[in-house]
Image (cartoon, rainbow, N blue to C red; front, side, top):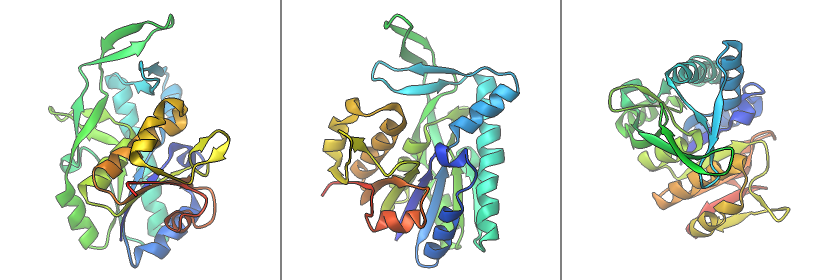
Length: 269
């Protein structure tokens, strides 16, 4: 089985989850695994240390995101690719696995399209247009590079930094980057590991949804979970067998997810 795992920023903030590393070690002998990681809170922490105040904006659809000027893009790339990815690689290496860290800029792994402008809501609740900065969306994946690494027995670790048309670094959403990677390599499963069991609606864990039902529920879902559900829907619509949202804080998080234990499964079935 080919599995793409997205390690949420809430997990990376507390350090590399040892239970995840052990689970990957156990599964990697009979499965091909790609890891995509987040870490927005850690980026904010280091930006503040460097005296670069971070700005967050909200779209008319209620999507909250980081406004990324060039200085922020450089800090984002430094923390994601230079710090967090290497932490994961070190942990996987200690577990006896061969791992390689990549950003989207390596061999144009994640090809992004830069947004020329952003429509956001101002403090008075009005729509306004601002310059797009260095924020983008993944529009292409170098699947050939990943196929080469997987066939060699490596576990690729991917930072959500895309490369634009002029090779500039772009801040892209990690959850949706994971869905693009999963679609690009025709993964069987994409698993989003976070700090809760899955999607909670009306105070209950949603255990199974179709992609169309999940898309219709997006306006009711809060900031932290919204992009995971968006990524899951995009992955399934692109042909990935299942998208699973689950807790990465428990023992055997991947094994539990693949067994559909206390999680949210999104598919076309």
